[in-house]
Amino acid sequence: MAASTEIRVPGERPLLVGAGISAVGIGMYVPFSLVFFHHVTGLSFAAVGLVLTATGLAGLAFMPMAGSAVDRFGARRVNLALYAMRSLGFALYPFADSLPAFAAVALVTALADRSFPVAQQSLIGEVARGGARDRLQASLRALQNAGMGAGAMIVSGVLALWGTGAFGYTAYANALAFAVAGLLVSRVRPVRDAQSASAKRPPAGYRMVLRDRPFLGLTAANFLMALGYAALSVLFPLYIATWLHGPDSLTGAAFTVNTVMCAGIGVLVAGRVRRSGARRTRSAALGALLFAAAFVGQIVLGTVRPGQGATLVALLAVVVLYTLGELVHSPSGGALSVSAAPEAVRGRYLATYQLSYSLATALAPSLFTALLSVDGRLPWALLTLTAAGAALALVRLERHLPAEAVRAEPPVAVAGAQPRDGATPAAA
Image (cartoon, rainbow, N blue to C red):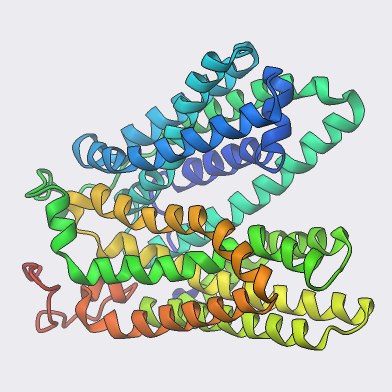
């Protein structure tokens, strides 16, 4: 009975509630981003698209500076600053009715949006230890999916009642959501222990990250996985429309199944994985193999091409398998990256790790469309290889990563464990 009781970490509730509220705000504009900003600012779709692309790339360049700021000022302070930037940006969007004004506001919010995962992941490392990190990862992902789904439903209802003129009010609602989330996170207090107290001053900057070959390997493995994560939003709709020749409702059904599963059973699945005692590297590898199996299923579906009813059933089965892979991989992979990063330079490490997601997201549209134009099964074949490669890499990296990163609850006798290449063994 005691094994099933999990103690909450200090500040866990405001952290989770804040993340859920901010996710509602994100859900109110992300599914409609081009339309949202077009109606809020009055600018053309082409101008909005150009500005969003340019500011998104600028946000990528800003991520290393955000990592340095986390190491210098602490994840909580940077987290609060980013919430404030996002709140201010959305409050100003209705007044940004010229191209320069929109570009300036969009730049502020893009810098904050791109850097936020670095600060949030670092904050998990500051407030939780051991298996609590995995649990927080799973809870945050579930709340973010639920919040984004709720936000999309809210804005859809608002638009149905009041039309596109209501987009301006949703901008203010976003600003309020980010402000409230920031107030909640301000109540979070990082864990202070002897290890964190002795690791205040970073011994080196990004040179230390670039010398850490195991962590770079972990980042490369995550890039391979991140291509698979991008498939749901980029490849699924194109594949359904151009290769399976299915209705657009299939895309909506796939997204709904994924969102409901992530929000509804994400914490349950992650808890089962965590209580099984599986090493984080191996549970993350299992998630990667489930991804690969789902991608093989897409190849089979694209080869057989059954009737519309059978296609719907088969596609939803593939989405269920894909989502299970996501639910198994995400908490373990996230906690693995947080725990593998040395505390003194955690921000820089996680900024490097998060770049793997950003680069995959930037590369996915052109890569998938190019392969799809040759054969609809080709991008799935590539994703099968990348997911399997990620699984293999995670298992091979296991003995090179710190024991406290590989295991959510390291064994007591870790003094003889092989330290990270170039790292100093932790005191017992």
